[in-house]
Image 1 (cartoon, one colour):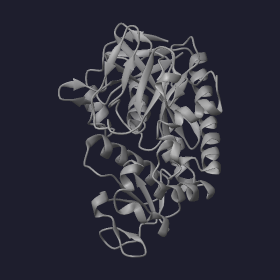
Image 2 (cartoon, rainbow, N blue to C red; image 1 turned 60 degrees about the horizontal axis):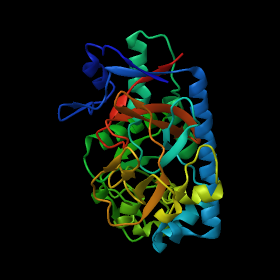
Image 3 (cartoon, one colour; image 1 turned 180 degrees about the vertical axis):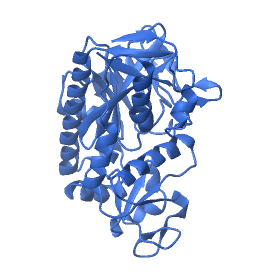
Length: 369
């Protein structure tokens, strides 16, 4: 695994925008960085793929255990959500996608940092944008990039009729993800509609959209814990199916890292994690049960003492053993490994000037040969 400095395409902005990716620059800071790329060996990519599939399998075992034992209180999941979770798991509702955050240096086994299981972003960048970059840059190599085809195939397994897409805010990164996913749905021959959450209504029997059409399937890019605070607290009374399914509440809660370590102690792809700091001897990372973009995460180690501010500082925390990201001349690189239709399907690299990956952290393309 190496980081190479390269010359970006002269017209790269126009090229990525032709794919629907406009969020490439944020306040004059480049989000999509073509001034560098990462080079892997085929063996390294195969190890990431194998480990990702292994971790996904472990996570499914954990969800099954949590549902069977009903230990939602360990994750501080509201009691009102328990029957919704159980129903979605017992009905074997399938997930479409998720993204594992992994630490990998090409030497040690990939380690799971957390699972963006509920509202993962950056799929368009991982799929079409990286593919276009590799095709145009003139570097001989390949990518682990089956995302697009597996999305199209995955939709066909998940739904039959119309899908409503929703999110809370008109945030560019959210809308770009939704537009891309709607394109893949259309390619699968399925129609869709877009509406914002505040337009969803309950008519006493069903969830309906602004045209009084019943919402049979709802794809959301809004966290489950927000959904349950809004009109969706009646989901257990409706026939509306939600993607990602409610059982993803278990995996999108960072407390699951503790339960996963308890279920599979010493697993080479996992890091020790506990609910109490006293259980860890030495350096640690403190993470809120529910947070995004690295907000309210603190890293305390011999060489680093970093805290990120945010809006998630009033809940419970998990303490995970420090395993620093590989540092390439001041660029700390995190691997996001996409799970599509239950299988590892592609990766992206996010890098930051600190060991904590945040919302502004850069995406850098990669290849292997």
